[in-house]
Image (cartoon, rainbow, N blue to C red; front, side, top):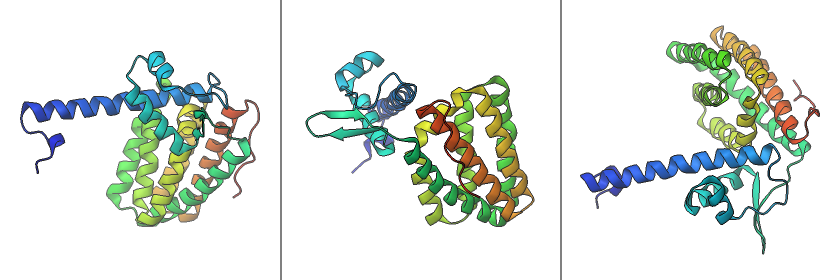
Length: 241
């Protein structure tokens, strides 16, 4: 049976374009809703009605429904019996434990990457880091967030351990809204870039211990910045070395 999304003439192209548009709209709704939750427009326990949100964002209910499903995976919203989907309550302590687990996994990946990355892998990582500096200078949080995700993805792939990388990626998905929202602050973009430099230097030097330490410190800082979103001015305890 032919794959409709693969395209079979004008009709297939139309279906593909519709699917791509829906995916893009869902991403936009998910990001806007996550930001509004993290920055206090929707408080814990607030019911997230699909119809109200579709009117708020000027979209149909379908991308809203998909965005809510994706945010449920992160734990930012939750479905409650007889109440529908509501904003979840996440404590700084719980968030700290998530970042502690991420730090362990990503530090291990950085250690393996320092030993296993090929010369081509290392050059790709270095080139991406150089490109990301443009986003730092311009204070473009959206662009830096995309490059930050790719920087970490290259290291996870470079570890050459798909099992460990899958666990790390799954954990990263849980805190994705927080990691993205922290880049609304220009000073966090600057600090993150400097932390990436230390990770990159260690990987290029093939220094496994330094790469693991630099990654652990980077994730600890990201965890602290994320905790500030939940309770401004309160930093979670740094992830232990």
